[in-house]
Length: 212
Length: 184
Image (cartoon, rainbow over all chains, first blue to last red; front, top):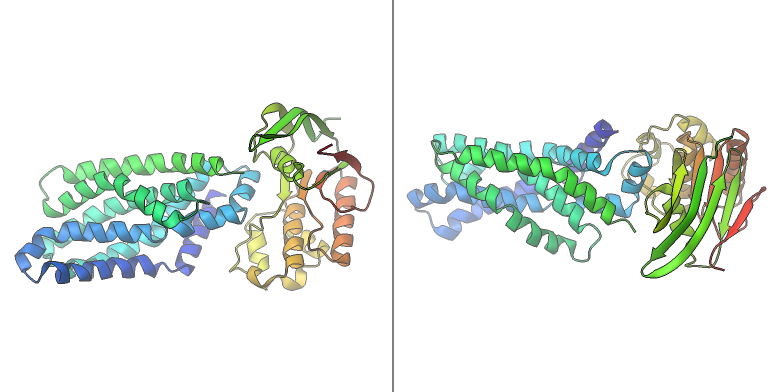
């Protein structure tokens, strides 16, 4: 069941506007030079952080379609009837969501890096940092989506919940784009792993708690 | 013979209000029970309790594998009906689609189905699952006369094959049912 659930998530992601977070990511990256001015040195210094803010905000866009439609439609109940653990549903959603979000964002990060004035080596570091960080963002998005599913004004609430939780990932992710020597990348990877490992359990518990 | 469903001394409290307590329930192969009662008496909650989607406040439930048809459609709306039903991997899908007159709708997207057609699709999913215990919450809602007859014959065949059915409905169900009234 988990395999077909991942395939379903990918299919629904691609049909449900997978380009939207990517377009949003590029838009935020475009805004940065307008907001801070065209000074190339300043842009190169803050570019990595700007890319991460763009990635975080675009990761929040799909939250409302990740869990809530399946809860409202009885899909999660029917999955439970087939004996699929809620944690497995959470893991499948996380993997499926990342597959439609992570690779596209990495592709968009190439033009995005030029927009915020990052040069070749900094571009490479940004791509590595985002490649490690986006699974963490996807894990967080699924867990937050499950926690807010069925609540009124869930979209705004999800943003309020997700941004503070993403702070450690953003700190080390953005640091890793600026400096290849430090341990930021390892710490970022550690935090992403923690989020990936924890998300299915949070999602599972939230799905069970949301049943009425 | 081992019962397909056995609930002992079940109690359920919802929103601070006790719906029922000390409820005993047993369904063997070939048996069917019709749960009746006024709105809000806990019919749907009892079905969800038996399904395992709610936890009883007291008592315990043992049951065989079960399939549930409630108000949730649980079919991907953008997919054609045949593919949406196939997601659930029911071993008897082809048979179930014929039994509920859905074979002509296999290529129609789920979002275009009428209320009655969607109900047939749900019931077909239950039948396709091939499990021994069917849990039906208001199975007649939206069904026309032909659909009701299809459901009754599907239930009769299921029972003849040793299956059991627990249905909650405020409408009359055809066939021979044991009755349980909630909210007295």
